[in-house]
Image 1: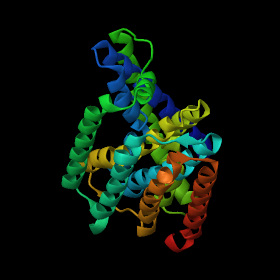
Image 2: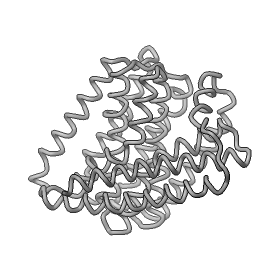
Image 3: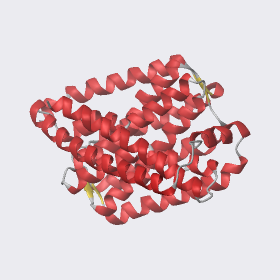
Image 4: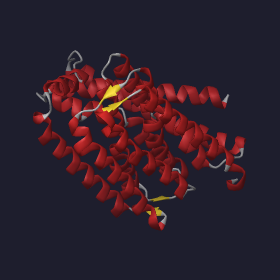
Length: 317
């Protein structure tokens, strides 16, 4: 029953995120926002809405392990599982901006999270600083967007190319999406707590795995579809952008609302997150292409991480 309810909660999150993006995209287009700008913001951030809702719900319920585990686990899964699967299906080329700007920023954000958690707490002040850093990144991205190669701009714009709707219909989609997200997020956090108790593992372990993968389904769907269409650069950009937003946006917003403790997230989990971010840089530089061999290696690393995480649970529990 817990697994069935967990599947239902993930479906609610997926549907809620999709409706939210569709409604917000239509509203933004209706007030004259360019398709490129929508692709850079509404679509990119909308896929991270499930992580935001789940982390906020968990933090307000005093479940810091799930809230923080969701962010750290999502970043690990985005690189090792989602990017690994996407590039295994279809090799991806890498745009110059990702090499020059986004990948280093993702690594810096990951290291910043380690520094913030040095005292075991993410305070409201630190959360606010993370949000400021996100704002700086978004402004910089907007300024750089017109200089991107035309194929990249076209693909970003295509991500927002949904038929416009009336304002009332768009608002209804946004509200419905938010309702599904809140309901699905609350249900998933409850299921995560029950699973941790039933399996005898820590809530952090559930947050790092089941919750993280469940909330990352929009990124998984977007990246796999892009890869199958031969748009691997979209898959890479989606993963890196999501990882940046997870730390700066989701963790920042959650900590501003409710300060977070480490909640069972250990140094090894943070090391896995930073290590994968650091490993991605040379992978991207190698021929400016991520092939099937690298994709298979990333999937192998994710499997090894899961085995290690489960193996340490008796000591943790």
